[in-house]
View 1 (cartoon, helix red, strand yellow):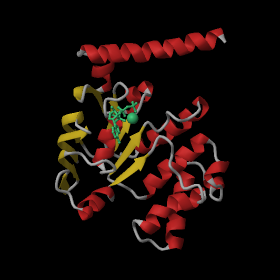
View 2: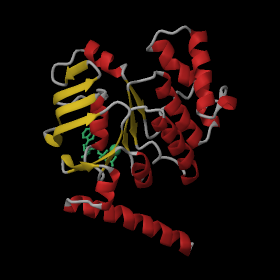
View 3: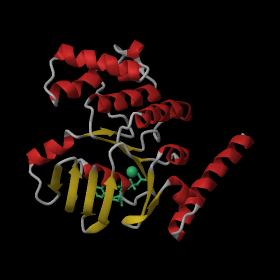
Length: 256
Ligand SMILES: Nc1ncnc2c1ncn2[C@@H]1O[C@H](COP(=O)(O)OP(=O)(O)OP(=O)(O)O)[C@@H](O)[C@H]1O
Ligand SMILES: [Mg+2]
């Protein structure tokens, strides 16, 4: 189980979020939605201390650490339980797809190179890129790069996978293959915390949807509750905006 308790974070005296509590059960997919600038990325990054919250605790399995007092060793122990998938993939440009996936196993887990490469080949097959093992990121499409980004996180077999808008830097044509891969992970009961604007994905895959606004969790529930029966006016407005944006895009597509 993953638990956030009373997490608070400010930048330069400006509170981004406060009093965030969240529980994610083993195998659950939790999707976080909300307007730009509400602290979704900061929250996600605080879970594995890419960003350090000012106070509160993060628990993953039997590790609990306090944001205020965590030591470097505590943070390392927690990070070993998580994998992070970035919006812009953040692959190593000088490493092949295979080496990108093997890298963490070698440097973080201390695996031998041939062992790590064998595992990376397995992962490449799972993510449908067995034939791209020797390609450098520059020779892969955006969708393929992001699948390698996910493969790299999968290789570490983390308790929790964190995704920060994994499809929003992609050309529309590559979004489906990445969402498809995420769905296959969900089907394997991989616990995931996902920030995304892909409302359809949230509807189909999430066990729980969390709406953040104004520095806190405003509403949470099943996709059915949040999308079909929203309560808070801010959520209603947000859903309308997302809907309107999509309609605008369709209108534009029809006109062009
Ligand atoms: N390193 C930083 N230093 C100072 N302020 C920051 C930093 N990172 C984020 N912020 C501020 O914190 C707030 C929350 O940012 P965050 O990126 O978490 O929002 P978000 O919900 O992920 O937005 P988006 O949907 O646009 O990605 C914003 O006001 C942002 O300007
Ligand atoms: Mg963000």
